[in-house]
Length: 475
Image (cartoon, rainbow, N blue to C red; front, side):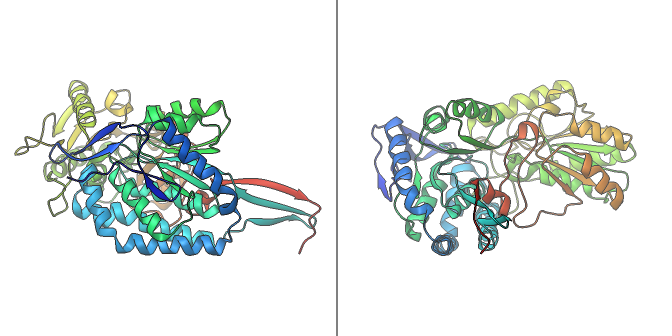
C-alpha cells in the first residue's frame, strides 16, 4: 500500500500540523490504496506565506531562467511518465493504455504548448510613442484541480502561473491525490526555488475554502463542478481576488443528414471515453430525423461492444468511475432516465462479471427531449442521450438551451453550414467533423461552464495584470 501524508511547502516535504487521515480508494477494487492527510488552516497559512515570501524574487527572475526550469521539469516529467501513469490509474481508474497515452500525454502536450507560447510572449508592449503597456504577474495563485484529468489540469494551471512569475499553492483533489504528490516531487527534482511551488492536500470545505477566502491569495484558478465554482466565487468576493473557473458541461453533438456514416459511432465512443468523466464530453447527440433510427442503433451497438474492466487491464476498454459517490449519482440518474426516455443499451447495475469496483454500464437513451433531467444535468458517467431534430434552426436552439456552454460538436460535409452553425453555438469551443484542437488552443466555456481560458497564450494571460505607464519613450 502506498502511503504519503506529507505536504510540499517552501521547498521541502513537511508533516501536517494535525493528524487528519483520509483514505484513497482504488476504484477498480474498492480497496484502500493509500492514506493522505487533509490540511488545516495552519497548513494553508504556511503554504500561502511561503508563496508570498517567494513572490518578489521569483517575479523578478529573468524569463530565461524560468524557461530553463520548466524545460528541466519537462525532462523529469518525461523520464518518470511511467510512474505518473501508474499513479493516475490507481487513484482514479483510468486504464493503463489511456493513462499512458492521454492522461500523462496531456501534460506533455500542454507543457510543450506553453513553452512554445512563452518564448515569444511579450510582457512589454508599445502603446504609443510615449506610453508602454506592461503585463505583470498577478501574485500568489491558489490552484484547485479535479480528479478526472489530473495532469491535464495541473499542468494547465501550474505552468503558466510560474512561467509568468507567479508563485502557487496547488490543492489537488483529495479523491485522486497521488498524481499531485508525484508532480510535487517532479517540481522538487527540477529545482524550483523554495516557495515558488507549494502543495497542500485537503478537501473543498477545508483547504479549498481557506484558499478562496485567504487575504494573501491574489487569484484562484479552479476546475470542477459548477456548484463548487459558485461557492468559490462567493468566498473570494470579500477580498476581490481574481477567480478563473473551468466548470461543467453538457455538450451537444449535432449530426446532420450529410454527416459521415460512422458519426454516431464516433460520438458514442467519445462520450464514453474516460468512463464519461470529461466536462467536454458530447453527452447529448442531436440527430437529423432522416438518420435518427440508424444513429440510435449504431450508438446502442457501440455501447454494447464497449468493454468495461479494471484499470490494470491492457486494452482500449473503459475503467470504473472514480468513487462510490460518483457511482451512486450516476446510477440514480440512469434510473431517472429509465422513467423519462427509452433505454436502448446499458442501464443500472454493474456490467456482467464485475461484482466489485465502481463500474458503470455504457448506457444509451433514445427519444430524449431537452427538458428531461438526463438532458439537463451533467451526469459525468458513460451515459449518452439521443435527441431528434428536423431543421438547422431547431438543432441550434436545442444545443443552446442549456445553462452550460463548454464544448459542442458539429458533423456535416457542408463547409458553409459547418461554419454557420459553429458561429451560432453558445460555447467556448466547437469541434467539427472530429478535428481536434491545436496546441495552445483556448480551453474554456460560456455561461455556467466558467469564465476563464486555459492553454497557450490565453492561459498565460490569465495570470497577468495590465499596467499602463506614460512618459516612456520608445526604445
